Each structure stands twice: as structure tokens, then as C-alpha cells.
Image 1 (tube, rainbow, N blue to C red):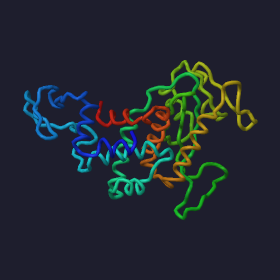
Image 2: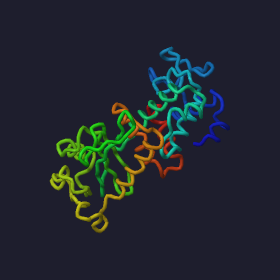
Image 3: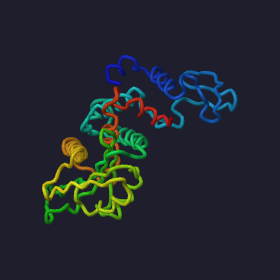
Length: 285
């Protein structure tokens, strides 16, 4: 759903409410308290004829108790989904005419809904790798520490199914005792895991159908159909988003930003870029 559609067809609160009622209840109001479909309409609310409670379509959803017009919520979702490299809260605040704090809160609520749609497991050929996010001191200057990650960088583990979806997780350190339990939880045993030569992945052959190692240090980047180009391309996209839009991300919110970028990658081939799926998640469907 794009901004043109929203401004033309969802330009009033009533139209937005009816849109959500169709998405949540297939157009048949259903009491969120007792499940009854017997109700009487009063404005944009409904009165349950069984339990006598009054309710609206936003009860129990991300939209509940919001003072922001639903049209602006829909516009924010559209802008976020269509910004491949992300959109800053400052830019979003200007685009939908809200203050910066409201825009930031909207983004966080939308990202939380994106996180709840993450895939359960990946299978087939799965590429795994880790990267480090961060890299600037308080003065804005990069500082190297013996060629490795800087103390203020945060390690991130990513794994992507070939021609499929991606999962990214913030981790404490790129060690096998941290990485392997995560991979075992999110990658099926029948999969072939493709990684670089890091020792963190050496136990993989015990847990998966195959483990292909691309030893970059010795110039090996591909073995037949196996390579790590997909996950490395994803890292490039992620870092362009951080450098170009977000600049710096605190450790406490890094996973939220990763969830947004992963959601958009996972729905990049859908006609609406995942809009319907995201609305469904926000409604608690």
C-alpha cells in the first residue's frame, strides 16, 4: 500500500477503522472480551449484546489508546517499508507532521510487530556469518584495536536461506558456545551450512547434514553452488542503512533495527512489501 492509495482511500478515521475491521474480523465485529459477534454499532465503536462491553477494532492491538489518527499510522508504515535503507525518526516526523518523539515511538512499535513475524527456522542451503556494528568514538573518529573489532562495536550473527529469508541476532561475542546454540535453534538439521573458516562454526558438521567452509584467508570463496555471497551482500545493505540513515545505534535498540531490516528483506518480493502481513501482526492476528 502506497501513500497515494492511503491519501485517496483511507483519508478519514472512519475509513481507516473500517479497513482495520475488515483485516481483523473480515468485516464482522467480534467482541474482544467474550468473542460474541452480536453487537450494536455506535459511531466507530460497538456495544456487545452478550457481555455488554463497549469496544473498538483497536482494543488489544498496537493501535489501542493512540491519539494519532490511523491515517498517519498507515502512512508511517508505508514510508518505513518503502525505505530500503531505512528512514530516520527526524525524516519520518517531517513526512507525517508529528514531533520527533512521536515518530520514534511509532517506529519502535512497528519494529516490535516486525520482530513477531520472524521465521521460525531456515532450511536447505543456509549461509551464516557474523559482523560488527558500530565503529565511532564519541569524537566521531574511528579507532582500530590490533586489526580486530573495536571495543564499542557490537557483534551480530546472521544466517540466510538461499533464495529465502534471513535471521539476525545481536550476540555477546562471536564464540562457538554462543553461535552454535543459536544456529541449532533456527536452522534445521537437514540443512547444509555454509560459513567462512572461523573456528566458531567447526562443530557444525555434527549438527547439520553438511558444512561447507569457504576459507577466505586462503582465497577460497566458492565451492560449486556453495558460497557466502548472499549473507555478505545483506551485511553491506545493513551497514549502508546504519551509515546513511541511523548513523549510530545504541546497543539497547540494535536488535529492533535489525528486525526492521530483516523484515523488509524477507518481504522484498511481495507485492505490498509485507504491508498486509505487518498490519495483521499489529492487530494481533
